[in-house]
Image 1: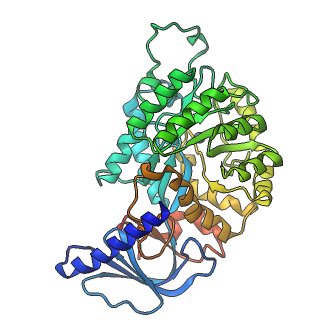
Image 2: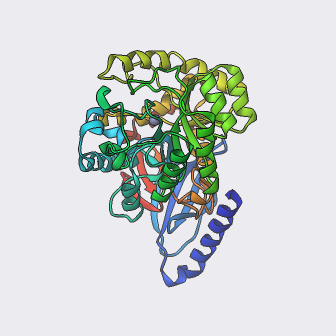
Image 3: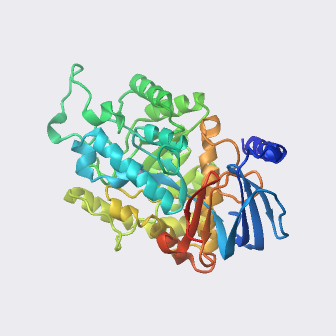
Length: 443
Ligand SMILES: [Zn+2]
């Protein structure tokens, strides 16, 4: 698929050149920049970058002569690919938990749309939405009606009864077959399914809604009340049923889980992306590495950005989980499991503004180059697991090279030397472009 995308990208670039004489393609020439291409630690010094339409056409240290291009002098800034967050919740990020659980879908969606614009303005040009009903927001962003990042939506994350996305109150059980679906299940904010037949049906419904991958929970969660962290969720047969439906759609399953046993069974059942994994030991990470399974982990710490939960049970679980963060990152790096970057910021639009600061926290374990590579080309590689369900097939994401999508940022300074620059995008990201369109330009 990567090769295919490359080929299509190169072809589109060629077409752009040929029709250029008829002035049908918008051209932007950004001069005088040092390019971090998403892959190589050494910047391409004093480069010029030509963007034709929504794709990068040329990157060169030599002057690029082109007619009819809008020229932007980068004044020695560093150009980096647009950032990618692979554990983002378009709707949950920016609504209080009480609103997600008791509010109207319109209120939740409007806050989600506002949050999507803010996400792009922080330089995150792509996100993998790992739970929530972001289909309409994605559609309107792609159509240019509202502003936001590219979204690879998982749709409603699926839980078993009593699992991580079962936020129903204590009195909600026992149920009987005549009970109507809970509000947030009927509006696609979350989904619940028990047993192989129901799991299979629900998974197909979510793919029909437009999911690019499935998100399930196979172990206890923090923000939920009735599932202690040690609890495994879904039987092996149920997990395999999710995986098989995803496979029929040529995509994969991502699963929320923390503990060794829950991760091991998920991996054995075919899950390809483990979300969180903070309570795993080294052997489990080796199992993931040997099975080509991604560790999608977040720099969640009980620090100044620590989450606050209304429920004391959740607050204690937060402490238990974040105690594992340091071990998880340092051991994952030693073991060599594929690590992706995400934030999982929840229920707080103010905290969401710290998305870039979360990225900068990776300095505890990685060099600035390793961090920037992870949040660009490496994360883009994880997105490619969606195969033909990946919505953006014209060129690669997360890199700056001919044929790639023109998703890029001009940073005032060199983040390869000073990673903290990504923590304050409102001051340091002077130009933000997505899909060839400039959303911010302070040059
Ligand atoms: Zn999450």
